[in-house]
Image (tube, rainbow, N blue to C red):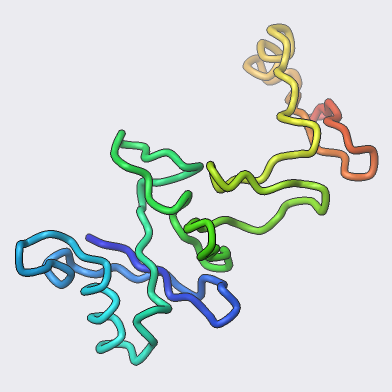
Length: 149
């Protein structure tokens, strides 16, 4: 099955539709996005150029089954279609975060959260604590918090 995102005039994903693979094959029997777009325009009365194919198996610029990733991420309702970078990405989580257009993911301005220590991980596993790092936008830092405290 092929998946297509229905895009608004402001580049927001309105919905995602599934199309039978047989309905998007060209004369050589190869999947063709433009045929899928024409099919969806005919059956939905939504412009063909506002239907963008998306891959259910793509997240963070990686295809989870080892195939070729398609457009950064699988499109979700409310996501943004970035035609310039040919990616779908979700909402910006914090004002300071920056979009990595290679992975189509947001990152803090100081990098990834620190790794939990072995002791913190064992306490999480034992359910005595639930340690995790949480982004502090005001302090521009990763703060260690215990979610069970």
